[in-house]
Amino acid sequence: MEDFIPKYKKISDDIQNLAKVLGGQGKPLPSERKLSEMFKVSRTTTKRALESLERQGIVTYIEGKGYIIPDRDVKINSSMHISGFYEDIVSRKKKISSKVLKKSVLEADKELSEQLQIKENDYVFHLLRLRSVDGMVYSLTESFIPLNRCPQIGTYDLTDKSLWKTLNEFGIYPEIISQKISARMANYTEIQYLNITNPAVVMVVNNLAYFDDKPIELSYVYTDVFSTNLEYRFNR
Image (cartoon, rainbow, N blue to C red; front, side, top):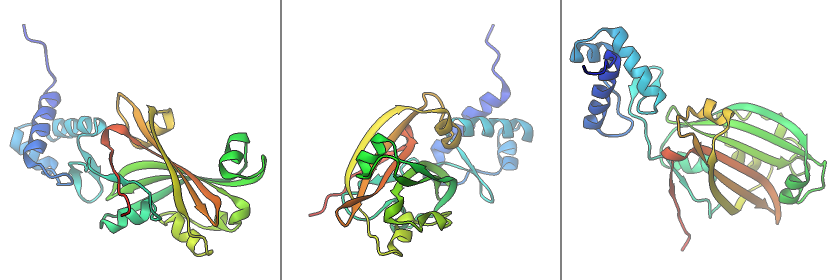
């Protein structure tokens, strides 16, 4: 006797095959109604199948557009130049949005003080943001800035704004001088916000930016390791 396979699971496989046929990352899938008619099942079954595929990261739901095939080729361009993540994404005509999850001032511990070349217990501005590209969640970004090098930064609303462009308003022009890339198991916060499924692994891009021969920002960009493609550019 054959093992019982739920109807929504069979439809999930059919929709996944359809996504492959349609090709083209970022393309929309047919509506729930059309998919139901296509596969001769109820809207409830179709909805359950789409939700299952969304949990696996195979499709993504965007308000006003419906389900689409997610772009798995969003690149982090190596910052061996002065442009930051925001500027790079915008330069490729993609829309980036940021949601501020946490904004605070903390005292630097030994490790942070050494990296930012400040004294222990000096105040540091801490910013944690969830960033999306073309409506799809892409990364968690964490930034640390010595407060004495830009005291006003904590008063700004950095929702959907470039941190570096905000620093430019104060005459500060960061340039990344070192970059480290690693991978590790994702923690609960990363799994929750990045919608990572097993195996839950994140890529961590650690940047240190300088201005006027002093560290101005230490940042960490956390992304799903299986949906990140690194592209390096070197100045000639």
